[in-house]
Image (cartoon, rainbow, N blue to C red; front, side, top):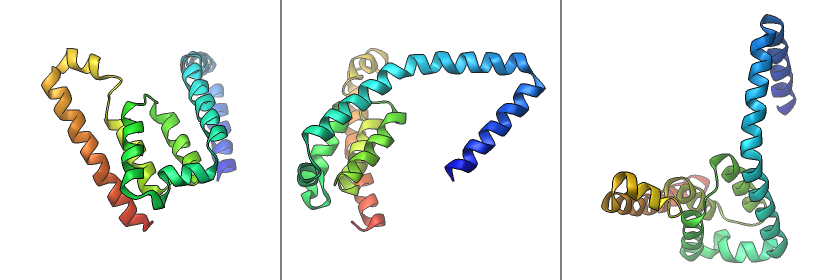
Length: 159
């Protein structure tokens, strides 16, 4: 499947290049600048996840947030996700690494959903824009909703 995506990408790139070289070059420059902006965050998160996976073996991850950890594991995952600030394009590969190293589906679902919806780290900015009450209500509702997401994932996956 990956090869098909690469072939299609190369084909479309070549088509774009032959149709309008200037626009294609400009698009490549913009893409490079975007990569330069994202790369420090991406490398930092990959480095952090690498350290965590080096410090905690699969057995420890499985004990803390494995499928047998139950509600406590879901709660741990939800709290870690709520206080962590990771962009979405890094969250899903991180979730895959956690699953490969023994984390449970419900726990990872709670982690990713709180990561995307709850903003403890971004709360001060949100309070300035929307006020303390609305920010608190939104974050609490998102935190609770993440448990619903986790239980639905557990029910669908059956683990």
